[in-house]
Amino acid sequence: MKFSPTATVVAFLALGSTAVFAQDAIVQGSGYQVSENTVVHPSVGAQTGFDSNVFYEDGSTTGAGLLQLSGALTLAPMEDVSGKGGSPPDYTFTAGARFQYQEYLSSNPNVTSQRNLGLGADLELGLLQSGQFPVGIENHFIRTNRPTNFENNTTISRDINSLRAGIKYMPEGKNISGRLSYTNTVDYFEGESTFANRFLNEFKLGVDWQFLPITRFFVEGSYGLNSGLGANSTKISSQPMRGIAGVASAITESITVRAHGGYGIGAYSSGASYSTFLYHLEGGYRYSPVGRVRLIFDRDFQDSVNANFYGDYKLKLAVDQQIDRVMLQAHVTGILRNYQGGLVVDLGGGQAARDDVILSTGVAANLEVREWIAVNASYMLASVQTDYLSMADGEIDDPSFVRHQLMVGATAAF
Image (tube, rainbow, N blue to C red; front, side, top):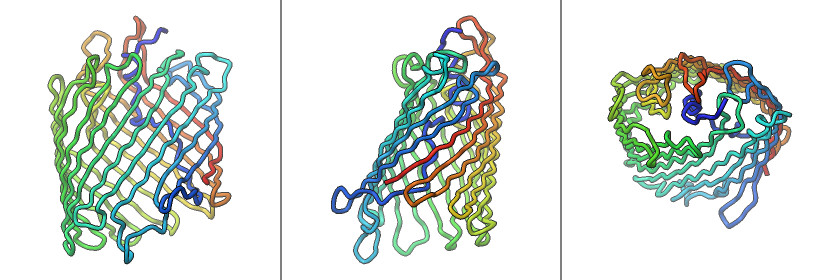
C-alpha cells in the first residue's frame, strides 16, 4: 500500500499524546555543581523488549524486537539554596533536555526504517516567589514519531511546543487568591502532513478560596483562539470557551476527593461545534502508608487534528504501591471518544463523525538498586477500535489496532 499522509494522520492521536519518552526514573544522583548555586543532573537509560504491532495495523500485524536508549540533562538550583530566614527564594528555575533513540531489531527493512530519535526540552522559571504577585513561565518542547498504520517505510514526525506564562495574586493573610495565565501551543507535523498543523492560544482566569487547611474551592474561566498554522493547513479555526467550579479536599487522612463541573462551548468557523456540560470526578484512597488507589471519571472536549474536535467519556483506575525498594504502578483506562466536524479523510460519503473505543492498561515496576541506579520493567496494552474507514491511494484503510509492548532495562542518574 502506498503512503498517504492524509490517511495516516487520522490515527496518529487515537490514544492522545504519544510522547516517546519512557517513565521518569525514581532515582536521582547528587549531580555536578557547575556554579555557586547551580547543579546539573545527568541520567542515562537502556531498555530492550518487544513490540507486537510496529505499524499499528488492524490485521496481519508485524512484531519486532526493540532497543531503546535514553538520556537527559537537568539544570537546577542546589537543594540548600533558599531565601533569607527560610522564606521562599525570589526566583526558581529548572532547565533540561532529553532524548530517546529507538532501534527496531528485525530483518524486515520496513520495520528497521522505523528507527527514530525523539527529543525534548523543558524550561521552568519562577519570579517574585516571595511576593504577592509570583510569576511563572514555562516552556516544553517534544518531538515524537509514529509509524503509519500500515506497513510502510515512512513515519510521521510531530513537533509540539507549549509556552505558558502566568501570574498569581496571593494577598498576605487572606484565604482568597487569584491567577491569570496565557498558554500558546504550536503543533507542527513534518513532511507531507502539514495540513494538520495548528496554532492554539488559551487565556485563563481563576479564583481559589482556601476554606479549610485541607479544602479548596475554585472557579475558572477560559477563552481560546485556535487556527491552522501555515498556508497548507486545513485546520478549522475556533473560539472555545469554558467555565467551571469545583472543590478539592481530603475527607480523612486517607481519602481525597476532587470534583468540578461546568459548561463548555467550542465555536468553529465551519462544520460541527459543541455546547455541553463538562465534569470531572476523582477519588483517592491511601490504603497503606505506601499504597494508594485513584478512580477518575471525566467528561471533556478537545480541539483535534483529526476533525474539528473530539469529546471523551473517560474512566481510569490507577494504583501505586511501594514494596521495600520496588515501586509498582498500574492503570486501566477506558475511553469512549467521538470526533465531529471536518474529518480530514473519508470514503467520499461525507462521513461527518467518528466513534472510537479506546482501552489501555499498563504495569510498571522500578527497583532502586542504589540511590543512583534502578532497574525497571513495564508492560503496555493499547487498543483502538473505530467505525471510521479512510481511503489511501484507492485502498480502504482501517485505523483500528491492538498493540502490546514489553520492556526491561535500567536507568542511572549521576
